[in-house]
Length: 112
Image (cartoon, rainbow, N blue to C red; front, side, top):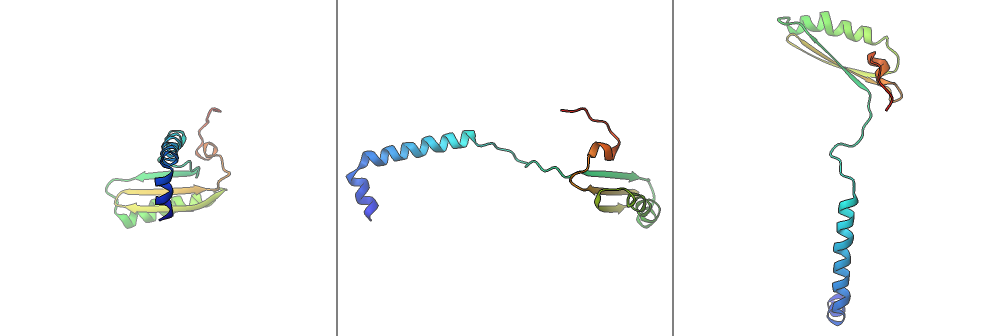
């Protein structure tokens, strides 16, 4: 109740306060950086194998398991995930944060 009495006794102070809130709110909204996706630098490489007509169990035995076995010998790998469907195998290789992804994929990148 005291705030109502204060607002009635000093109306100009509340008008100035409302204008300051609008001004600072507008400045904050304009200067705040907006990004839908945060900068996350997780080095990941996806490997996709396709072999049309090969059943899922055969694809897993012949392609996915062998590829995972070979990838397990590579340094700086944090984890490996795979998914096998009819004729398609997707393998995601997650590297340690300090690894250079261009060296891991064999691509040369130019400095920025």
